[in-house]
Image (cartoon, rainbow, N blue to C red; front, side, top):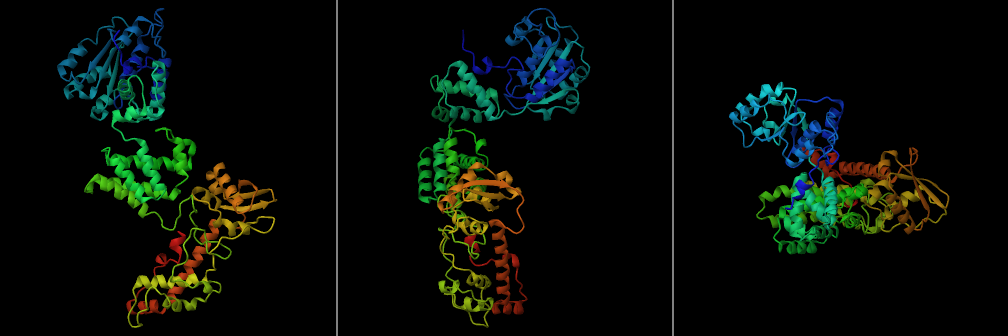
Length: 598
């Protein structure tokens, strides 16, 4: 017996065997069970999603004789064993007239077809006209079809299928029940391919099936055809490397190596990976698409780890890689990647465009933000009394006050004096207005003199109980990053009995609560000497206690107001206002050190 391709061998013969399209199955099954049969059905959708298959199943439902035991009526579960069902499956049922509209577009062909509509079916219960690619009919053919399509004889059913319903006249659409078939998601395709290959006894790798499922672009028939090709290519087996070579896709390990170099903030390694990649002659635009795809999956891995797929057999590696990025970095890199993809059309060559996009990701990475593996992202307002500067943070700018000055805050009136002492540039004469940017920065630095020294992290609390004041003082030294830091920043210490520490979480952040974050907070507290069993509960926060995030925002607003006040008292700023009618734009004023704090 000759070999039968998988797409034909595994074509569904009942609604139960059909993969996907549940919305169409439900409507048709209910109509068949209730006897509410329309005279014309229109199936639309892209190639290979099941239009013709559904039409043939419906034809069997209309003509099945229930296992040869006589006329049992229309059914939604055709037996597949009676003469009518077998004839339809084998394509020899005389009362199923299949018409390829692409090759019979003339009005004469349509009239010849309609001349036989009046005659009763020869073998089955209904005479079924299956017109495929119906949008290819000419306008005259549609006009000739309209009357019969609207009021056909009771023994006739029309089943129309098309990939382009926009080309059908509204007069035809209004006479049919239209069902739009959807693209199949890769998950459904991969699951079905696994069952088929298991039944066929073909060894396969899951990651190879994901490549086939994505290459099929939602078409099950395309997926089956590609699987046939992969089996032939791999000599009876389906492996990831063989499928990647067959499809001409890039080895996913190269993409992961590029993303790992981004995580390490290692520009030389990043360029070395691009050089190694260039030896394979890839499509660099597709490489950038793959990188943004990995960044998308990393964002999902951080937010909803259980939702990460195993599309390339890299789920575990992806979850580990997600812990090396902050959520902010992933979002920034993704946006730069999307923008770089659009800029590729204007670049001198695609390789240079890819390299510049990757280097831009590192260049625009916030300079004051250490990697999560070292030190977490510092919050604004961390210079408050009792606060601490994270271990990786740079010292205050050279234009600020000296270390001995930080222990005794100076009044705001000394701001111009402090600005004059800045070693970065000598002050201009009074009759020459200074550059605006320099004056703005130097005036804002007056607020730095009011900050206490925070060059070292606070020690672990000496008392037996860890209170909310200790939580605020130690927060920046915990080393938390990403979503865990954001969650902890909305917590207060509710109780500590020496064995169990209870944190209360702002209810607005309850959706972020997860065991992985609780574990990281507990480990961070243990690292500074607070070893407790940690309990995290969501509830309304008392008004007298503010969580670290609220405290940071309050202090940042206070520093911003002080910076504006210092600038408004600066004699140089006053002279500019008098001479040119200048005014301060409050939103542009930043306290000294605000850039480093992020």
